[in-house]
Amino acid sequence: MRILILGGGFGGAYAAMALERLLGDRDDIEVALINRDNYLVFQPLLAEVVSGDVGVHDTVTPLRRLVPRTRLFVRDVTSVDLEASTVTLAPAFHPREVVLGWDRLIVALGSVPALSAQPGFAEHAMPFRTLADAVRLRNHLIRVLEQAAIEEDPSARTTLLTFVVAGGGFSGTELAAGMNDFLQEAVAAFRPALSPRNIRVVLVHNGEYVLEREVSPQLARYATRALGRTGVELALGVRADSATPESVVLADGRRIGTRTFVTTVPSAPSPVVMSLDLPSDKGRLRVGPTLQVEGRDDVWAIGDCANVPHPEPGKLCPPTAQYAIRQAALTASNVLASIDGGSQRPFTFTGLGKLGALGRRRAVAELPGGVRLSGLPAWLAWRAVYWSKLPGLDRKLKVGASWLMDLVVPTEITQLELGGSAGVGRVHLKAGDTVLRQGDLGDHLYMIISGEVEVVRETGVAEEPLAVLGPGEYFGEMALLGRGVRGTTVRCLTPTQLLTLPASDFSDLIAGIPGLRRQFEDVAALRAQRQDADRHEPFRDPS
Image 1: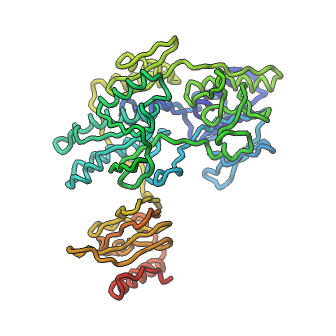
Image 2: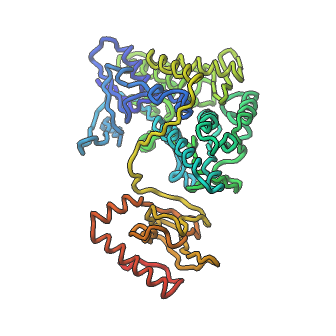
Image 3: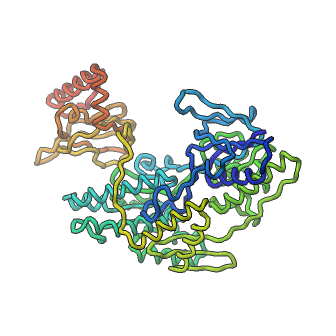
């Protein structure tokens, strides 16, 4: 028989660990785990990766080391066939799908960022959920400091040194605090060009206090005051409504100029989970007290992708690691009970407390027995608890060493370039936003998906209107075809969605397809003629 686990986060990995312990030397049951990564990331310490308090690899543990007897498939799940009891995995090196059958299925696929609900979030917000997100953000912060140190335009420098985080839960609060600590310390290497006074970290939260849903009102008020005292600017009672390449727009109309927008909210279940024909609430699978999915005797669901009833009537379990780990252990026991004909037990865990870091060696903590701590004692408890929960002695040693070194070693500001060309991207802009400016170097080709833009030439006295462009048209090719700098300014007339192609990729494209280069050159020549013949005639692609 095969027990198949989808997802290798806290829920999936700990379910496999529990099954290995319970199975012992039995060889009649195979445990298989499917996860896109071959490691388990200890998410409570991701903010410490950004701040540099721990190393990149210190927060991850190889799954093969945690569950050596479990068959591991490092693939994405593309679909689940409930009738056939099969799961289809995405291709890897060879363009062939893999189909696996199961006798018992544990769904632990967690959640994913839900960025499509707010305009511009998918294009310009940086999610913060994975190790890759943390590494990418840290490199971005260092790159911003490097560029701000040599930026001569005061307005552009202010925009660069403004950092916005959306979400006042544990993730957003800890991230904003960690970013602020890191940036305040890192600018020491950039003096006299930069100073701590130049750094502005803004936390946007739609509640009255940060952590108000996570901890008691007393601790939430303390957390809000403490975060403010560290220098984090709080935008409370309002949510981030939209984003552009150079700003975040709040629901009350305020616009914050920034090149760094990180969001920890909202989230949604995995698309695979949402595609399942199973009882659910807003995409999260509905399970009973034994964590079995309603209407199925062979499927269990745990963690963020499930609505797990809390032992206290009328409540649901929060999507936190301590609950996922206990759900995993119970599910492993119940799955084996269903195979061996035993009775399944209900979920009775009610929590062991809550911890949240606030930067500058401050934290809030709610511990068993009603103990509430704040400040330095809570921070020490925060580190002690999470250190004890790290899986594996090697990770405990590495993280402990990193924390000790952090007390005496200066902040590391090495930037790691991790990728090549950005490829095709998407940009969301508001009415009135400038897409490109006359005199700027040509760096992208722009294609309009929706909205309208106006093209104008700045003469030094006034702006001369040249054209209006709409969906299906493109612009920016003239500077990429050898003209160097932009000859016009392009500004949005309405909210606009654009596709962007970097100059390097554009050059490769037209070099590989000679006919395409000729077409772009013909259109550019025709546009130049039309500018002279009729300043208000919209550019049209003759093809």
